[in-house]
Image (cartoon, rainbow, N blue to C red; front, side, top):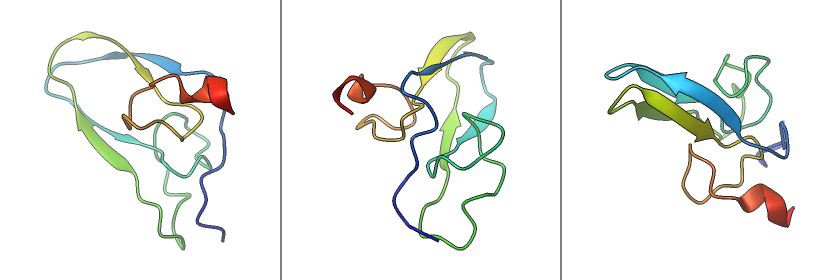
Length: 80
């Protein structure tokens, strides 16, 4: 299995998060439950990124897997 992330989509995933809830963002791009991890990274050196919401609000999780602000989108998809 390659250890380079796969671009799941070239746009962020808008998600309504719940304060105090923990989310595991897919960093490999192979999860069928984007933008969250389903264990598809197993066998690679890529691991999901843990994120705990600080407030109830809409966030934009990275879909291209190249953000420098993982797990959130920083616009890196526009440069791919």
